[in-house]
Length: 78
Length: 414
Image (cartoon, rainbow over all chains, first blue to last red; front, top):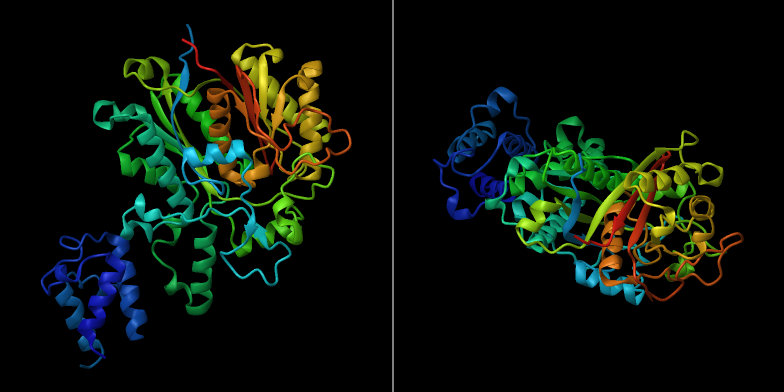
């Protein structure tokens, strides 16, 4: 599975942002307009799409698009 | 000290017979029928397969697409009605004291579709699958919150819940808040999105809905001898209430004045009205007392008129108890014959109907009324609208739980 493409798709769906805004350094809260509830939903979207479980302590460290892709790739052993 | 006067300066509606005020009013006076087959879910195993649905509603006209997904549709209706009413009022939000502008806006059930969707998620995937937006989408007060967030209204902000009397209680509270000086402007009303499997199934189990699937266009027939239950509707209504001087100072157009409210409890049964509509008698009397007027001034009653056996009989008896001989001189009608029963939104939509009836000197009809039931001998304005000067009008709503609200409107005169 193309992790990057899937992550982008989920972010677009959950946060209602344009693809052009999704850069590795983009912060979910500062750049993509997410609030705390959006972050929870985003993480749930990742869990569901990749069929994994993301503990809260891990989720707290994911603050940018790049963080999410790196974390998920590691988690999936890629 | 004289009481501060409260007038209606803006209105907005989303209903099964029109998605804005003009369509709604044209529908009301032409006897438009909002009924049709339920399209929102598969009704195969349901006793009732029809309702009065809102048609061709596009929430994205009023709400950002991202925000839309975080709201139940009852809140879409609320924000649509608010946007229309604000535009209609021509209020300039940059020129008013927003701390004295509030929202009292209710829903009888709240986000029951959201509840059903999220419960399905839970059953399929366990508690971790429940959306973080579940609670703030579902709760019945969130529409009031969303309206205030959208427009920056920082005055009193809450929701009322009293089943089918919900939005009349909202309007009553907003009226009282302005009258006592807690606010100058109130956005008030209610919305409902109740045509869902659990809601239709539940009302069917309570034997409250009409089951005339083969005669659905004739099913909502208040006061008729063959009435057999209500027809569910959906939508929302919002009135901008404003302190009179505030309205006059900015040259606002005024639809009507609210001059009295009567709020009572039956203390009798969870769903049935007491014999003689005793609670309704007191709510209408209280509205008249609150305004300090004689019953004989009333020209029109927009009845609760649900098309159920018990409501229509008891409301008729109640009207006769309050008005005596004058009951036969005033006009009564149930606009639910056209819109269906919007539950928590009924009071708001019917407040709009009543204000427009006063403003236009036209009584909307009770369609489908072929032959009144036994003991139902008032002038229910059958079939066609009637031209009539209306100086005072009452809108009645009564809710499961024995909650009664009567609001007294008056033609505006300085």
